[in-house]
Image (cartoon, rainbow, N blue to C red; front, top):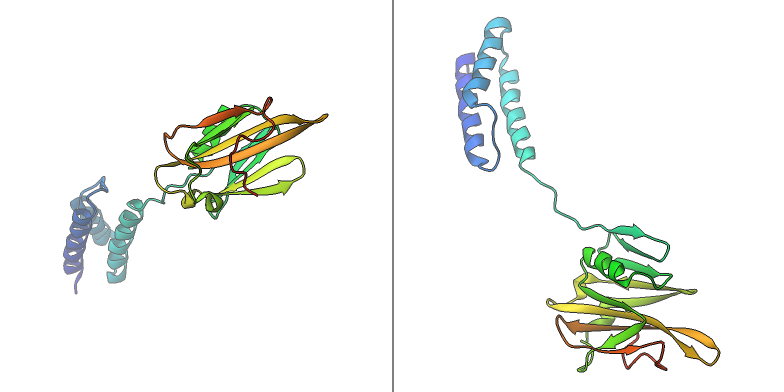
Length: 208
Protein backbone atom coordinates (compact mmCIF):
# COMPACT_ATOMS: atom_id res chain seq x y z
CA UNK A 1 0.00 0.00 0.00
CA UNK A 2 1.52 3.38 -1.01
CA UNK A 3 1.25 6.63 0.93
CA UNK A 4 -1.76 7.93 -1.00
CA UNK A 5 -3.69 4.70 -0.41
CA UNK A 6 -2.82 4.87 3.29
CA UNK A 7 -4.12 8.45 3.54
CA UNK A 8 -7.34 7.39 1.80
CA UNK A 9 -7.77 4.56 4.33
CA UNK A 10 -7.17 7.01 7.17
CA UNK A 11 -9.86 9.36 5.80
CA UNK A 12 -12.37 6.51 5.71
CA UNK A 13 -11.42 5.37 9.24
CA UNK A 14 -11.72 8.86 10.73
CA UNK A 15 -15.07 9.46 9.08
CA UNK A 16 -16.40 6.15 10.43
CA UNK A 17 -15.19 7.01 13.94
CA UNK A 18 -16.84 10.43 13.80
CA UNK A 19 -20.16 8.96 12.61
CA UNK A 20 -20.19 6.26 15.31
CA UNK A 21 -19.56 8.64 18.22
CA UNK A 22 -22.62 10.84 17.91
CA UNK A 23 -22.20 12.30 21.41
CA UNK A 24 -18.59 13.31 20.85
CA UNK A 25 -17.71 16.41 18.85
CA UNK A 26 -14.59 16.49 16.67
CA UNK A 27 -13.21 19.99 16.59
CA UNK A 28 -11.67 19.34 13.18
CA UNK A 29 -13.09 17.44 10.20
CA UNK A 30 -11.18 14.39 8.92
CA UNK A 31 -10.12 16.39 5.85
CA UNK A 32 -8.15 18.82 8.03
CA UNK A 33 -6.32 16.00 9.81
CA UNK A 34 -5.58 14.28 6.49
CA UNK A 35 -4.36 17.57 5.04
CA UNK A 36 -1.84 18.01 7.83
CA UNK A 37 -0.72 14.41 7.44
CA UNK A 38 -0.23 14.91 3.68
CA UNK A 39 1.82 18.07 4.33
CA UNK A 40 4.07 16.21 6.73
CA UNK A 41 4.43 13.39 4.22
CA UNK A 42 5.47 15.82 1.52
CA UNK A 43 8.01 17.52 3.77
CA UNK A 44 9.49 14.58 5.64
CA UNK A 45 7.97 11.43 4.21
CA UNK A 46 5.30 9.56 6.19
CA UNK A 47 6.10 5.92 6.94
CA UNK A 48 3.23 3.48 6.70
CA UNK A 49 3.37 2.53 10.39
CA UNK A 50 3.15 6.20 11.42
CA UNK A 51 0.03 6.73 9.32
CA UNK A 52 -1.60 3.70 10.94
CA UNK A 53 -0.58 4.91 14.38
CA UNK A 54 -2.11 8.33 13.73
CA UNK A 55 -5.47 6.83 12.83
CA UNK A 56 -5.37 4.54 15.88
CA UNK A 57 -4.39 7.37 18.18
CA UNK A 58 -7.23 9.60 17.03
CA UNK A 59 -9.70 6.73 17.39
CA UNK A 60 -8.55 5.98 20.94
CA UNK A 61 -8.70 9.64 21.95
CA UNK A 62 -12.27 9.95 20.71
CA UNK A 63 -13.31 6.73 22.43
CA UNK A 64 -11.87 7.72 25.83
CA UNK A 65 -13.46 11.16 25.65
CA UNK A 66 -16.89 9.57 25.30
CA UNK A 67 -16.54 7.38 28.41
CA UNK A 68 -17.69 8.83 31.71
CA UNK A 69 -17.08 7.28 35.09
CA UNK A 70 -20.20 6.10 36.97
CA UNK A 71 -21.58 8.65 39.41
CA UNK A 72 -20.99 7.91 43.06
CA UNK A 73 -22.46 9.43 46.19
CA UNK A 74 -19.72 9.65 48.80
CA UNK A 75 -20.45 11.52 52.03
CA UNK A 76 -17.86 12.24 54.70
CA UNK A 77 -19.12 14.71 57.30
CA UNK A 78 -17.44 14.65 60.72
CA UNK A 79 -18.67 17.15 63.29
CA UNK A 80 -18.28 17.34 67.05
CA UNK A 81 -21.90 16.22 67.57
CA UNK A 82 -22.16 13.50 64.90
CA UNK A 83 -20.49 11.93 61.88
CA UNK A 84 -21.78 10.40 58.65
CA UNK A 85 -19.42 8.46 56.39
CA UNK A 86 -20.07 6.20 53.42
CA UNK A 87 -17.92 3.12 52.94
CA UNK A 88 -16.48 1.47 49.86
CA UNK A 89 -19.01 -1.34 50.36
CA UNK A 90 -21.93 1.10 49.97
CA UNK A 91 -22.84 1.22 53.67
CA UNK A 92 -23.44 4.38 55.69
CA UNK A 93 -21.76 4.66 59.11
CA UNK A 94 -23.39 7.10 61.54
CA UNK A 95 -21.93 8.06 64.92
CA UNK A 96 -23.99 10.27 67.25
CA UNK A 97 -22.15 11.83 70.20
CA UNK A 98 -24.43 14.75 71.03
CA UNK A 99 -28.11 15.36 70.34
CA UNK A 100 -27.68 18.47 68.20
CA UNK A 101 -29.13 19.53 64.83
CA UNK A 102 -31.32 16.53 63.95
CA UNK A 103 -32.42 18.25 60.72
CA UNK A 104 -28.80 18.61 59.60
CA UNK A 105 -28.10 14.99 60.47
CA UNK A 106 -31.17 13.87 58.54
CA UNK A 107 -30.13 15.86 55.45
CA UNK A 108 -26.61 14.44 55.58
CA UNK A 109 -27.85 10.84 55.86
CA UNK A 110 -30.26 11.53 52.99
CA UNK A 111 -27.34 12.85 50.93
CA UNK A 112 -25.74 9.44 51.45
CA UNK A 113 -28.75 7.81 49.78
CA UNK A 114 -30.92 6.95 52.81
CA UNK A 115 -34.44 8.44 53.00
CA UNK A 116 -34.70 9.20 56.72
CA UNK A 117 -36.57 11.09 59.41
CA UNK A 118 -34.45 12.01 62.46
CA UNK A 119 -35.82 13.34 65.75
CA UNK A 120 -33.99 14.27 68.95
CA UNK A 121 -35.99 14.48 72.18
CA UNK A 122 -38.77 12.22 70.96
CA UNK A 123 -39.19 8.85 69.31
CA UNK A 124 -41.78 7.98 66.69
CA UNK A 125 -43.30 4.69 65.56
CA UNK A 126 -45.86 3.71 62.90
CA UNK A 127 -49.26 2.57 64.24
CA UNK A 128 -49.10 -0.53 62.03
CA UNK A 129 -45.59 -1.56 63.11
CA UNK A 130 -42.25 -1.73 61.34
CA UNK A 131 -41.54 -3.31 57.98
CA UNK A 132 -39.79 -6.69 58.34
CA UNK A 133 -36.64 -5.52 56.48
CA UNK A 134 -35.55 -3.29 59.39
CA UNK A 135 -32.89 -5.71 60.77
CA UNK A 136 -31.29 -5.91 57.30
CA UNK A 137 -31.30 -2.12 56.93
CA UNK A 138 -29.98 -0.98 60.32
CA UNK A 139 -27.47 -2.34 62.79
CA UNK A 140 -26.57 -0.69 66.09
CA UNK A 141 -23.02 -1.04 67.40
CA UNK A 142 -22.03 -0.56 71.04
CA UNK A 143 -19.32 2.07 71.39
CA UNK A 144 -19.14 3.47 74.90
CA UNK A 145 -21.44 6.44 75.28
CA UNK A 146 -21.75 7.10 71.55
CA UNK A 147 -24.50 5.69 69.37
CA UNK A 148 -23.01 4.02 66.31
CA UNK A 149 -25.23 2.87 63.45
CA UNK A 150 -24.50 1.09 60.19
CA UNK A 151 -27.15 1.54 57.51
CA UNK A 152 -27.43 -0.54 54.35
CA UNK A 153 -29.31 1.57 51.76
CA UNK A 154 -29.43 -1.34 49.30
CA UNK A 155 -31.59 -3.32 51.74
CA UNK A 156 -34.30 -0.65 51.86
CA UNK A 157 -37.31 -1.54 49.71
CA UNK A 158 -38.36 1.11 47.21
CA UNK A 159 -40.67 3.73 48.69
CA UNK A 160 -39.59 3.25 52.30
CA UNK A 161 -38.11 5.59 54.89
CA UNK A 162 -35.96 5.01 57.95
CA UNK A 163 -37.04 6.64 61.22
CA UNK A 164 -34.42 7.39 63.88
CA UNK A 165 -35.56 8.80 67.20
CA UNK A 166 -33.15 9.56 70.05
CA UNK A 167 -33.72 11.23 73.40
CA UNK A 168 -33.23 10.88 77.12
CA UNK A 169 -35.55 10.04 79.97
CA UNK A 170 -35.11 9.99 83.72
CA UNK A 171 -34.74 6.61 85.38
CA UNK A 172 -34.47 7.19 89.10
CA UNK A 173 -31.73 9.76 89.56
CA UNK A 174 -30.10 9.07 86.20
CA UNK A 175 -30.66 10.35 82.70
CA UNK A 176 -30.87 7.42 80.30
CA UNK A 177 -30.52 7.75 76.54
CA UNK A 178 -33.30 6.15 74.51
CA UNK A 179 -32.86 5.26 70.86
CA UNK A 180 -35.51 3.70 68.67
CA UNK A 181 -35.75 2.93 64.98
CA UNK A 182 -38.44 2.09 62.47
CA UNK A 183 -38.70 1.29 58.78
CA UNK A 184 -41.91 2.61 57.28
CA UNK A 185 -43.55 3.22 53.94
CA UNK A 186 -42.74 6.76 52.86
CA UNK A 187 -45.45 9.14 54.04
CA UNK A 188 -46.88 6.83 56.70
CA UNK A 189 -48.31 8.43 59.83
CA UNK A 190 -46.28 8.19 63.04
CA UNK A 191 -47.03 8.23 66.75
CA UNK A 192 -44.41 10.24 68.64
CA UNK A 193 -43.60 10.41 72.35
CA UNK A 194 -41.52 12.98 74.18
CA UNK A 195 -38.69 11.02 75.82
CA UNK A 196 -38.21 13.67 78.50
CA UNK A 197 -41.57 12.69 79.98
CA UNK A 198 -41.95 9.10 78.79
CA UNK A 199 -40.60 6.13 80.79
CA UNK A 200 -39.64 4.26 77.63
CA UNK A 201 -39.33 4.48 73.89
CA UNK A 202 -43.01 4.60 73.01
CA UNK A 203 -43.23 1.09 71.67
CA UNK A 204 -40.75 1.55 68.84
CA UNK A 205 -38.43 -1.28 68.00
CA UNK A 206 -34.84 -0.85 69.13
CA UNK A 207 -32.28 -2.68 67.03
CA UNK A 208 -29.49 -4.42 68.91
